[in-house]
Image 1 (cartoon, rainbow, N blue to C red):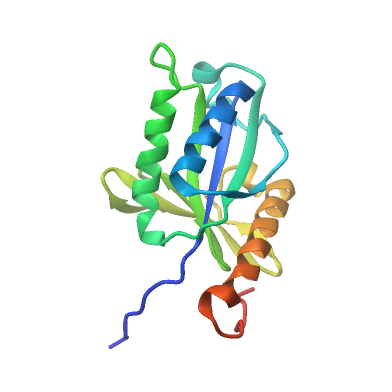
Image 2 (image 1 turned 90 degrees about the vertical axis):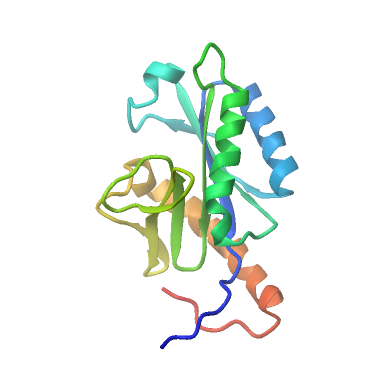
Length: 185
């Protein structure tokens, strides 16, 4: 029988899809109130990988990623997703969202995203929230699975997540209070 142990805290990341930068700033402020200091912000990127959001958000969509200094327990992912859904709802206008907020976490071996949509490769967490391992770390970079969204397959996104992973890796020796061990990948 295997022995259970507490999971190492993970790096909270959030991806945004939006059109209005003022709404993004307000959403970031709400997230800072909930999760603390932001320690990484990507550049604002053009989001043109799908038409899925066009009806709700319109054209000329943008994408941005952030991560938080404070690490989280991976067990809290469902609550975090419910919290970001509430923020999306608060910024909605005439029943339509004005920003899409996708939380997830990253550790040394994977990037996990939270979603409300079930599918064969997703695991139910609780309260209508599922988790998906979207990327895995191998050969010194994040790699896609067959189900990985097209934008998450890009080298540009891999570079962003590699950078966030490096920030996370630098915090682990202090967190664990012992010399860092072998890193996966």
